[in-house]
Image 1 (cartoon, rainbow over the protein chains, first blue to last red):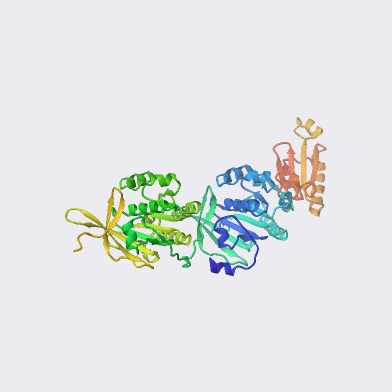
Image 2: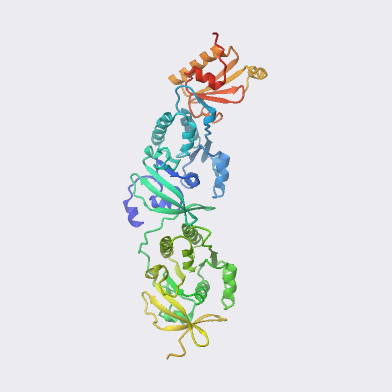
Length: 474
Length: 106
């Protein structure tokens, strides 16, 4: 992001209020110019446009006009309420005008020469009423369906864009995606300042929404496809950074919650803000190590977020209770938040979006991801790998000390090849002995500290997790 | 708004309540007004009222009848409401659009 910011020319921007979009565009849409938002049905075009008007009205002191060719004012109010927008309130406060322009070709007979001055008159009237700076036209395809003479419509659209530019109004116009061109009616030909494409794709039976800034005249912009999420907190885009390595390195330490393990880590535990992975087969005590870490953090007045993939919160609390790790007081005190995630309910990108969103709401010091490997069960392995990299990068950039638990198969192949991104790698194994099973723990690596090279014993008792030296040092 | 004359004529199917929307005194506006008066005079035999609305002067009226194209002629009576866009230069099409049977003396 840093290098991108430097490239941006001093072009005035109109913020959209959409987290992420304003970042990849270096501040928002080009002020005083038209932006085309195109995509298939149900991609979120109207919601993007609405967010942009709400941002203007509430945050930037720029009132707006929503010219809706599809939905009535009431429908718009209703459909955007679930995203936390109160359009009726904005209308009452004279920050927004919604003009529903109903066009029905069935009702229209054509005889002789005409133009679309009526549209200009209505727009001008509405804009004047609230001294608008922002305008939305949603969607242009309805006009193409309703106006019998396409030549007149095209000429009038050209005139309209010039008219808006002259008044320095920032325009968002929405259009359907075309088969061979960006939009079905070639609107991109008229709107050359900024073009945003929204897509909703189904891969491996999981729907994923993506946004791409195809064009932005006079401004640098991120060119990747960014996943986005639409939910009760609005429209969120994930401008996933390029795995920049500019993370701050802290000298402070965070206890692993297990005295014996801290001892192996130079006597002090993990580095604050570092990424730690614990790998091991099933039943090696990974979750216990995670829970112990979370509890220790809470005891030191730190907030912990626990992403839980394969169990419910109740299961986790019950199971940990049996080895003396009582998570309930921490949960009720609000210091520990267990966030269960079902890998199959969302696409991968949705997962990442959701996880990041929860993180941003809760702002934890510590994070546990239990297990990271669960993310693999959705999406292809390449997708999963990329997503895991993004998650690691995000949590690291956010400065959270994060413990990833990962199932490691018998072949000893490092899960997801993420070990190079980890500051500390701890391995746990089950050793089958003659009469019983013993858990062994050792540190594969731990950057920036003299750590123990011993293989030690991990035991789960009635009072939590313990790490001790082996008794038979034979 | 319905005039007394319109109200009176409601029983009578042959009353035409017409409203023409224009924007300013452009040549297109004038053509539409002239064409409308001429065609009504020729075919409607005094059984009509014409209301001309200039949206430049009364922009607030544009939304009510869902005006987009200009000029637009709205047939308010007889119901159902019908709309014709253009300067009404094609008499044939206008009569068709308004469902007016030609009454021109042959």
